[in-house]
Image (cartoon, rainbow, N blue to C red; front, side, top):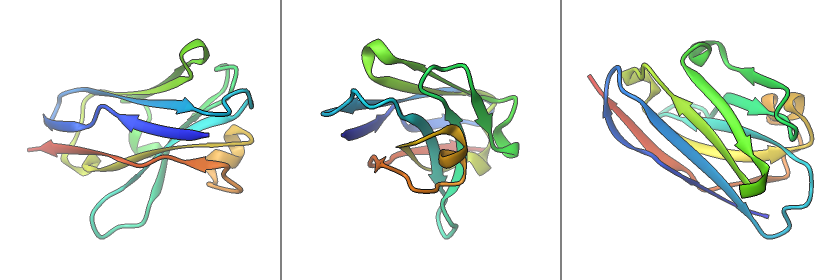
Length: 123
């Protein structure tokens, strides 16, 4: 499975962006999908996760209420809608897949990682 993240860019504080994560290759496996981010000089951190069916989601506290994760399995794509962006949201955002929302949230035994997309939020 190959994962391709896209949709990053430069946005002013308070603005919005939508990231996409498209899977290709062996996409028949029913993975949960997650988003992570890594800011300059910081460790990678979990952002959000969604189950294969889409009926279970989980968010990190800093983004809860501002970000929404969703997926369209017919398009093999997961999304991260980011609203009310803050300068501290500036980071490279990565998508990844794993066995369950709990596994993804803990970044435990992840199956595949994609390359990142840069999000820059100006003040």
